Image 1 (cartoon, rainbow, N blue to C red):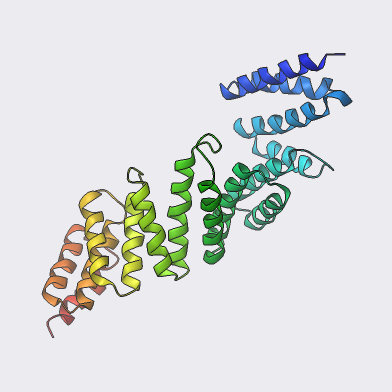
Image 2 (image 1 turned 120 degrees about the vertical axis):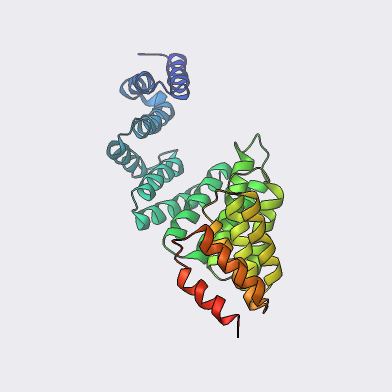
Length: 287
């Protein structure tokens, strides 16, 4: 019978290999613990089972991984139940099994008080609800992730700033899509102020401009559409931003400017889906 110290060493070797992405080697260590553990090693075996499933996921054996995570979630008293539920929920989400993902993650939230895990679960639930077009619930989940992350240090929450950026941007978008435009303006402005080097800044500018447009703050909307076009010459939001500028001007009855802006839209995007509308609005501006 192997000593507890030896089993701990084997687990450590498995973890080291896992972090080095040496998955077959890591799997061998964890499988040894699973096969050799006795009652004294019960907690180590539980950890080995979790990592064994994680390795299957990393190897691309998604079906096997899902089966192993599912089996762990059904074990009575399994000590890492919330982690297993989250991993199963993530795989279900990636497979577009949205209801399964939602129910699994909601159960995981009830099963844990670990803040770092709760942040990840709320982010995942936010994505699930967003894909289900339940935008109000999505925004609340992202807000929960943000709120918890703000109480934690970088040491307590790995990639804290990345997580905060994700929560703020997606919360702002969900708020806009739930027609909570003023709340969206606050959250998207926070994102832009706190995460100036984020590569998704153009998306935040677009949704911020859209939120200002929806609240009839048309000059503000125009300014942010223009900033997006100026700062991000290859953004996939440029076409919509040209269109937004033209409409912001049109609604302020600045018809000469709006006509020019509609022309710029058609010139830069000859196949634009807004072409018919742009030509009609150009004509309207002359009356």
